[in-house]
Image (cartoon, rainbow, N blue to C red; front, top):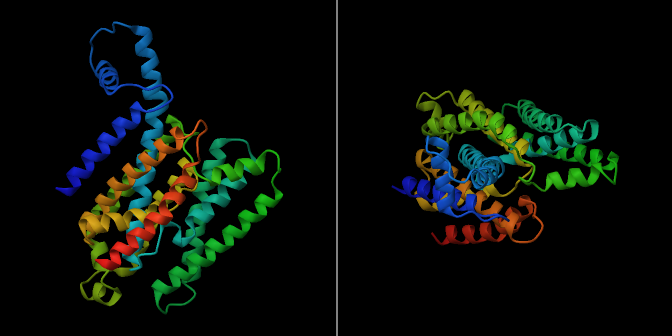
Length: 331
């Protein structure tokens, strides 16, 4: 029941977001344009129809789709990491994926002016950072969970340091402002080509995690209990890390570094639907998608110039997270 309600809320939020912008479009016009696109009815006002189609389909729809994908992916990966590591303070950046992706994108901005190179660098180094964390964790076989967390901290610190080196070497008039602006997170540069290229892997990753959520319940009981139930703990843990890392890296490809979503939203979802990951993961996806849609609407409409959405999610996330923790303690 709750999942159905959240799905309806997400659809309504997306519809309202389509109508908002410097050129307001009524919900009736949105439904009329969509109806004309899927039917053979004749268009009475061709000029007006083309303007609305350009605004809705070519400009706003890719951005709204990207916000939904990023919010859902970060929230699901955050919920997976929190359940798997049995730690409520874990976020998708735990294993260094966001630090690695930031470094890769910054290197792409230095060595090439191609947006594709920047996105490829973000994705590649996000994966490399997680592989480095896994390699560090394999040094010792004692307490694998603790070693994974330590490996992630070391990997994240390494790529954060390398990012500082790249910033120091960047041209202070062109490259450095571009790097800093991109690291703040934003959807102003998103286009339909990027969304179409990324949406498939992101959806497959999210769907796979939802289908495997029952195993996540077993892993959250602890390694010994999971093994006693016949679960291959090491394989499943690597699979969850791989899928959550893929979708987290792809969010950086689409919108830069957008923090606090993967940490905050799973807590809100847990307060609404409880700790069962079979319900928690889809609830986190729907709440995270709606949350980032609303945040993006505010970021692009609050002032005459657009605010980087990463700044907004941080400003909202910090006090909101403190409130969530306070209510959780009362509960």
